[in-house]
Length: 503
Image (cartoon, rainbow, N blue to C red; front, side):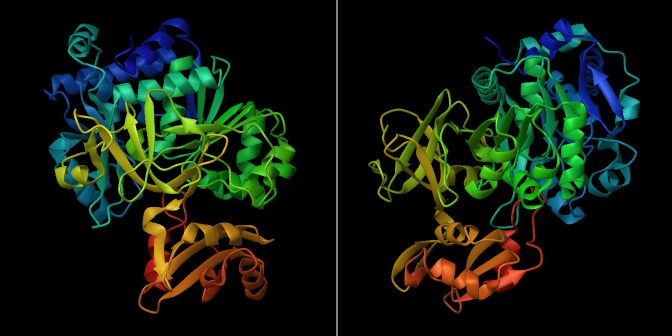
């Protein structure tokens, strides 16, 4: 049984030492080169006396240089934490105050910013690290002491108090996901992945680990390119990319700007998405122009290692329908609980709670927040059985599939009714010429506010929504924006909209 993700890297190095493993704008690395660089990083950190399970922040951006940094930290027995190099210094400082990293691995491009954040003795340049000769014997001794429940990485998510939360994920969690995804999707060494998500976002996890598990090739597409979907799809066509794990926003933009119609990307055979709701309207556009691909709707917060459930789309859906998020992944238990923590019956909306190997080890250096959402399973009171409260509201349909309804914290009480704002958003997204929609609640004025991006006029939007939801759910204010604000993860910036229109 595998106990470390490094088993994947070493297996692919053994089988395909000269095969191209990772490609970016500046070049490529073979599996032999990638493993060698990772061992150099591991040897350097071990020589510096880095303690096992200590944190090393990786401050390198979206580049192939980051991969040997991640796995080099792993070789040294540490926990790697990818950083957003473009984030404001103050936010990065708050993150590093939580993580207290032993070292920050960076390059010349990002070195000055790293030095603003930590003392100079903690800043390590990759070009200097690469001068180290790898010591396999030393690294093997470290790995012999490791177990599969040891932490692998930390990804930082926003916190309601303004202090970011560091989600700690184990080797076992990543291995279980990677194994099932690889077997279910029939990945092999013939796979060519195109990475969309930045490495500080957990949507990049399947790109990294499904690649090295299968001896596949990963193309790292620069973040800025996704503002120009035709350019991205032309790259996919040129390089014969056949598999992608993208957030729906990237697919939506390519559909809305007609890139998927104008560029033939039928080389794509596996199209997988996760991180937010994929509207059926845009899914159907992709299905129309790339009909032979296998489409999979994954669901899972960062706290459950990318995906807890998945649905391989196997039937037709109308634009006004909702794609199911499917059934539980391997070694994962899903519970749908009502407000009294009783199991919901089919069709009843409740909170989705997740247990199993994919559940995070908690929030790093934050026991209070950990205790709030990583809780004892109320259905198993007689032994230790932790589950994660997602805050997501779902229901089971007649086919036994889970359907996403909305966020628990997007639920409001208006005019005496409990309302899911996601339902109003869903109604708005079915209006012709609307590209994105977000619903917020102005607590002070007690008004529902619908903000949207698209060419539809507000009167048309109001009439269409009015025909799809009860009167008490019709927004009191409807605003059209030239462009919806997006956060660093490519999702609608709800916090900013709430600050601007909801107070």
